[in-house]
Image 1 (spheres, rainbow, N blue to C red):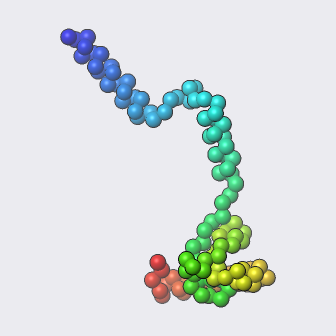
Image 2 (cartoon, helix red, strand yellow):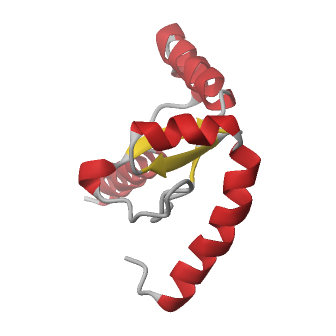
Image 3 (tube, rainbow, N blue to C red):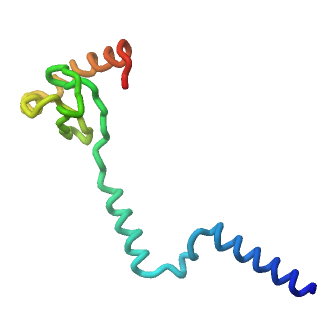
Length: 115
């Protein structure tokens, strides 16, 4: 009987180790798994644009809704515009539009419930 107790205890310890580890140690990973991990590292090095989540169009200051939400990336930031024409205007003087827009957007966030 004591042997059965020790067997159950050792089995419990081994199961606990396997379930807590989650996967096999690194030495047992296959080459494909290692390559998959390397590929994800490379893709994470490519910077994704930061989503600004603006509620007002930077050009005409109209509210952005799901029906009229046009994305545009500028300096690794993703802005939303009211229409494609607004994007064309924005491309002419992006810094000027952003300078004015930031003040309006800040006012909008402070004074209106920002959903």
